[in-house]
Image (cartoon, rainbow, N blue to C red; front, side, top):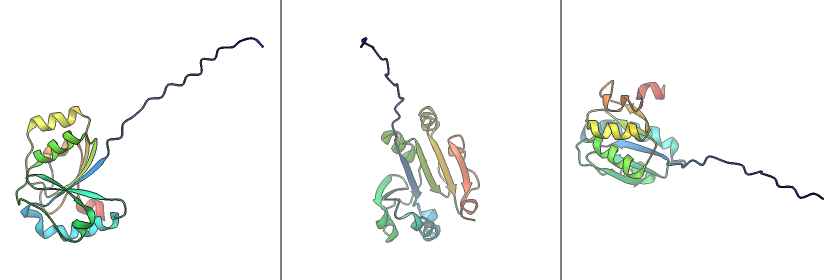
Length: 147
């Protein structure tokens, strides 16, 4: 048999999955809407193990703790804490549930764009737009998603 040399080396592009994060606004202005939001999220209880609550800081809680009604909040609202948490944990996608009454620095917005972050912002009980997240992904009303 003649010696044969096969170049059968297959190149494959590897991707790193960085995950999806769900951030729920628990500031004082959304207290009246939380039972409705938690009720909607209840259908995801088998898929969601943890959820990130945010006001002026981000706190990770087990989803069953949220379903039991235990919420940690500072009663303020700040989108910068979300941006910093996303950047630190290298998330590439997130769902942000908020009434939209907060701000984010341009520096954090630019860093998220540079990381090719994509977000879905779901607004409820407040503003009809969110310029802070508009350039980072879709911004929809809760009514549009649940109808």
